[in-house]
Image (cartoon, rainbow, N blue to C red; front, side):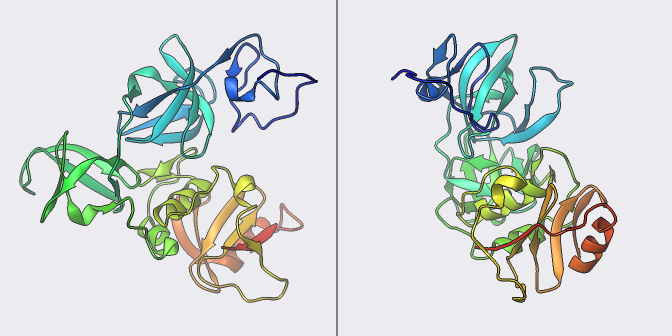
Length: 282
């Protein structure tokens, strides 16, 4: 495969192409001095920021959770550059946060769960696992038995056991702190909340709010809102809990909250002529 014409414009958030190297899958669309075949790794840390640049001081653009896959295109200076396998989001991850891929069987479904050293709630705690972390283990009566320890079955859900109500998943995260780039029970941004809730219901969603605005179908003008509808604002998104209440992770409250949609619109109205940019139904 080779480029036979000019490079095409691509979205750098989801296409791994830099000035010096690119994913070989993009060889028919972009020119690069070098192409690389991505190598699959798994996140071995409880969580790891995906950063815009290879620096601890760089802005986090997303988050990789334990057990999730990351395709490495390039490695330099202790940083892996590539993309997360679940949404293809591109960025830099500390190399020491990555390990071998995990054949996950379960996902942490509670806002957080504990990894115990033994199948006993009084046993020492090895780690705190936020919602979204993937695990590989064998189900028991009370605990999931993993290679690293034991997690109570009330805190996990089998990967093939999709949640029936993604809005209910978002409601479990009320009170979780707002964190730019976050997408776990330990902290989320607005689109991270939506992506996490939908993933628990078996619905794949892109990372950013402008990308998520393509999900579902536009709600007709004048049609009443209902539970589960996605409401989009300039650079923001939330989920309707009912016809009048918005669930969203936001920097105003610095938390995931449920509040009247009208209050959110009124807060944004001084800055935007059209606070609500889209209403979508899955």
